[in-house]
Length: 260
Ligand code: HEM
Image (cartoon, rainbow, N blue to C red; front, side, top):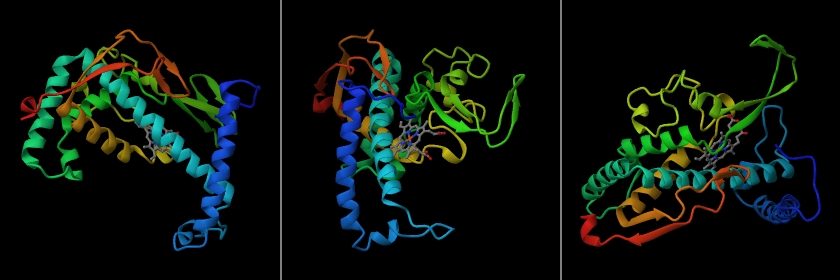
């Protein structure tokens, strides 16, 4: 996805310089790690006996940092917007989370608790349906294909687009209406709902992201109330879909008696 243009003074240019600095730091860490037990992990050869190069390790680490931070933070921000605009959904989320908190009687949340957060997960899924954070990714045609009357030659680059199917009434009735119930039961048809992509290059962080977002919302809805300062704030691409002004909220800590 990297742009081939790099103009002095632009944010993109600064980002490229920051990338260089990060890569330099990672070089130092990799050199240290190569000398300890963890080095076994990064020194394990592939099927052809090739070791992972420093370039590949650095690129992968940066992909994880980049792919693992903005995606979940932006998705959570959009969830907060939809919960604020749909108070009846927020009440159902609070009810579900309260039930879990009461059962825990002071214990820490664990993995099994997140499996009980069915409605909260439907809210997150519906948020990613209406406003997927990653709207497209690329593929390469490994053989010639015919599609929609067009020939796609082998080797051509293709981009799939999540909003194209997410906002299609053919697959999602009233596609732009915020309706978490569309994820009840078996949910949408295969390959129509793609917030994490699909097939071999599907997001490897999807389960981690699910857990992170559910745990965050658990603590947030039980302990805080929020309102949007500008409910009409527009979204922008940076490079993921996110709020133009960073979604400014007014947040209050809940009275403890309300949490019980
Ligand atoms: C709401 C959160 C997230 C969303 C919506 C999301 C979405 C996506 C999408 C759409 C792709 C491209 C898949 C494709 O090409 O088919 C992707 C790739 C990737 N994601 Fe995520 N992601 C999220 C969270 C994370 C997290 C938490 C991590 C890591 C901790 C992560 C790591 C990656 C990596 C490394 C790739 C590249 C995989 C590859 O090229 O094979 N993502 N993600």
